[in-house]
Image 1: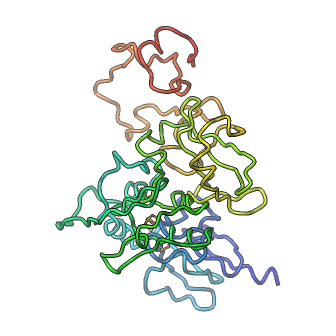
Image 2 (image 1 turned 90 degrees about the vertical axis):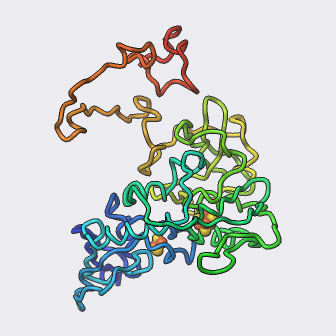
Image 3 (image 1 turned 180 degrees about the vertical axis):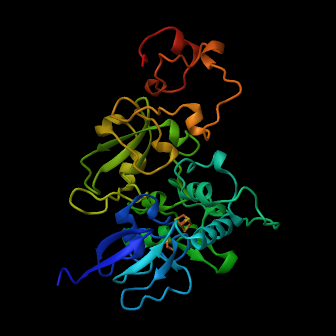
Length: 375
Ligand code: SF4
Ligand code: FES
């Protein structure tokens, strides 16, 4: 009964038909764009994930065609399955936006404001969430949590103060490795990620915890403090790996490979391989293959997620376009009182030079002595 199995759900006034059993979050992702609620703990590739962070709350204004009563409270869209005729409000609901702002405030209560030195900056889901729903100030007057340091081995760095206890890394270790040696210990505001008797996480697939961590709590030690992600150029590449799919994204500066990650989709999740399997990668590909010669380069990776790392890497090279806005268009129609042209003041940033083509930091010489970077 394929037709009867399809349920019609309307989210933010956009209707879609989805198979019974689909969650509201998955249905919203099928519609796409801002209709999809943010999700800090749900991860479609990890069984059992979701239901922890409450960032995906939505308002169900009509339960179903049969029982149109609205749901009395906001519900977690990652854990709520659609009913036929259901109507849901995400960004069209004041209540949802208010609740989400509250959730962000709670998530940030103990989170350190160390984005300037955090390796996750630029691709951090909490950073994006705070930008969209956060407040400029905090009402929290107490000291933030501190933790005893745990060493997770040579490849993975844990910053427990940044952890939002989403459990994704625990599910990853459970479902991808043969022996989980870390988990969440204690309860309430004592809860923390820790390994029992400081065992290092060294299973061949454990590096994937770095990719699933939505914040900078688990980062790559081989990349630590080496560069900012927005200065790097992501390239899709693959190698014939006996252990994993071997399909990765290399984060390069010039010819130097700074880090290797799995390929991620627009929701920040691991992309599927052409065979339809999640493209998890092994530790050897991630931590040990740091030379371009190790890889067959496929070409520039387009970052589909809305983030600073998606900005202008290949403008003009792979079909992206330079922004055409003029000042008034981005300033509510107001024109500036005084406008200075930087090119009148400085040799640097000449309009004929294409900054996107410069590999590495630029100097006066870059602009004065050669034409390689002409736009
Ligand atoms: S370390 Fe990262 S992935 Fe693990 S629970 Fe904390 S925030 Fe989630
Ligand atoms: S994504 Fe739904 S509760 Fe975290």
